Each structure stands twice: as C-alpha cells, then as structure tokens.
Length: 511
Image (cartoon, rainbow, N blue to C red; front, side, top):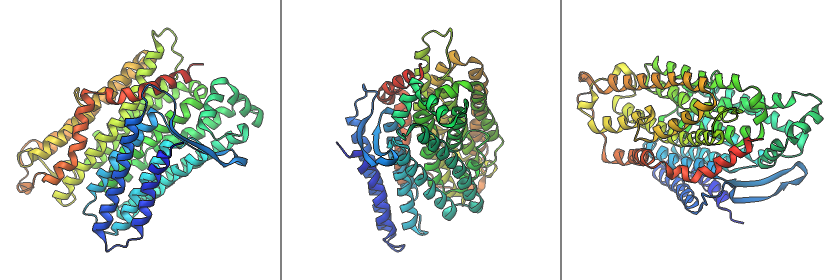
C-alpha cells in the first residue's frame, strides 16, 4: 500500500504547525517555509498525475484500513480522475495565493499557517472516501477560511465572516444529520459502498425499513443537498458569498473561489449523484430551475455591481451554475435522445473542465484585482478608473486575457467546458439550456463593460503615473495565463485523465 495521499495532506498540515510556532518576527522564514510546503504539495500532485492511469475509471493510490470498526469508520483514501483533478487545482492555486501574500506583515506566521491548514483540508476533502474521515476535512476547510476573513479582511470583515460561518455551518449540520441517518439504516459511511447500494435499490429499501416512511430517502437527500448547495453556492443560498469574497484579502479570495467553492460541486459529483440519483430524478424540474436561476440571476447581479471584486464574485456563482445545470441534466431519463449516454458524458466532462478552468481563471482575476488595489490605494470601483491601457498595457493585456477566458472566448480554457456542458444539456433538457444562454449574454455584457470602464476611454489623470506590472508580478501571473492558452488549445490534457471516470459515473446513473 502506498501512502502518497496521506503524505500529501500531512505536508501542509505539519508545515502550518511549524510556521505557527515560529513567531511574528521571523517573517521571511515564515514566507519561505509556507511557499516551500505548498510547492512540495504541487510536486506531489504532479507526480501523482504522471503516475495516474487515465484508462482506469476506478480508484487509484488507495489507502484503506479499519479506524473505528465498531462504528463502520475506515481510513479510506483514493482518487479517480475527479479527485486527482481537484487535488491538482488545489496544489496550483495555493502557492499562487501565498506568493500574492508575500508582503503580508500582520501576524504573518498565523496567516500562512491558516493558508496551509486550509490547503490540508482541501486535499483531505478531495481524497477521503469514508464520510467520517471526509467530514473532518470538510470542516477543517471552514475554520481557517473564517479566521482569514475575520482577521485580515476589509472594513466589514466581521459581519462577512460571521455570515460565511453561519451559512456553511447550517449546511454542514444538515449534511451530518443526513449521513447519520444513512449510517443508522445501512451501517456504512463508505461512499463507494453506498453508491453500490443506491444502484441496486438496497439503499432506499433499508432507509424505508429503518424509518418506516416511504419518502425518507427524499428528505435525507434534501439535507445533503443543502450542505453542498450552500458551499457552491446555489441561489438562494448564496448571500454569504459576495460579502465574504469582497471583504476577504484578495489572496484568500483566490483560494475561496479557485478551490473552496469547488468543494460543493465535488460533493454533488462524488456523493449526491452516485448515492441519490433516484431522488434527484424525482425533483429534477425544480432542481433545473434552481440551476437556471443561479446562472441567470447571478449574471444579472454581476451586471449591477460597481465594485469590481463583487462583480467577479457574482460571476463565480454564474460559472458554477453551469456545472449544476449539467449535473442535474445528466440524471434525466433521456427518452428519445440519440446516444443519451454520450450526451451525459459530454455534459459531465464539461463540468470537470469548468471546475478546473474556472478555478484558474477566477483566481487569476482576483489576483489582478489585488494588484490594481495595490496601485490605487485600495480603490476597485468601475468609476474609479478609465483609460488605464495607455499607461499599463501589460497589465491590461494579461487581465484582458483572463476576462476573455471567463467570458468563454474560443481558444482559451473557458470555452471548452461551457461548450461541452451545452452540447450535453441541450438534448437532455433543451428548455433549461435555452434559458441559461441568457446568462452567457449577460456575462459578455458585464465583462466587456468592465474592460470599457476601467481600461478604455479617456485616461483618468489621477493615475497618469500608475506603474505597470513588475517583472516579479509578471512571473506571478504567467502560470495561470499559460494554462489558459494550453487548455484552450489542448483540453485533452484534462479530458484524457477524467473521461474514464465520467464514463463510470454515467454507468452508475443508468439503472
């Protein structure tokens, strides 16, 4: 048995403990150790990617042994294409966030320790396959994020952190109660075992026998759904996000939107779809409407914003709404649809691409906002700037690439995932796909408005001496920009690794 996944999770966790004990005065050592720990995680993730067998849709790098046998708790780790992709995304975004925080002097040892503990929680969430073990990491990601917002956020950081904590905690409690009920009925916390029970119909039978209620499966599903819907977030459970994203330090927002929001979509893919497909089908139309509302209303909310950071925050909700649309459509009973399994596979391939690509693009956009705030003394309103392309052309060009990636311009990474989602969803739920295209139109409008108001038009003379990107800043944004082009031209880099996993998931849904 190998222990790659355990080591991958322990490195940032132990690194955070060491850094927290160094003290506030050793700032350079703290920064160096935090960056080194995150780069070790990146190196481990890349090694796993190179040793991963893309033709196998099953779990790899598996670690499994009894932990608390009397409670059915096992230490069970493993990744398939989905888990490995999220591990790689976490490993890429974390060192970028640490580099973006390089001048953080206020309690730097605590700040960087919390960043590493957040990374450990994310690694654990994407690799654990027993609910008890998984839930520990799910909550571990919540605590550092709360303190990062509360202690280093903007003027309204207190209410934003509290709202973030309450929303996510309510979702976590609902999720915990649902799985305690499942454990009581089945005796298992094992995601893979529970998915097998769902496919054979045993899960529903055991739930009904344990609780004596025909619709108990649907109630338990809604509890689990709430836990993930808050994390994505799904409208109307989204109101914590704009405040949290806008008040958090921009490097922290990079982690929140780049990786942490993917925990919710990951939960839908890893847990809800395999374990509750029958319940999803029972309420499919309302769920599709929720996905459509998440896409369209969040795009409209982004269009109404004057604060660039809040605009991008709402844009993040919009982009993850497409993932929800494809997830729900993939469970539909596709009567009369040619090659329905192929359409479902295309939609779910699009979801995985969208998760990874949005993580790169959104984190890059928030990084550019941080660099803009640094140059403007904290200003980030649409009306605060104008004509910046004349004095900071490199900054304008590189942020423009990120914006067009978010818009879904062909040739950049954002296009392929959205294309596959709509390709798969149109035959499965044509009305939902058609209405959701309104979100594409509004997204183009508000992102082009951002470019026009900030970078085009007459120069605001207040910023006549604003410096362009330094050499260090150019190297900081280069990895994300390069990946936008690489994945836009060669999406098979990801699709080749995840397609077998997607095919297996589609087979799980067919019964």
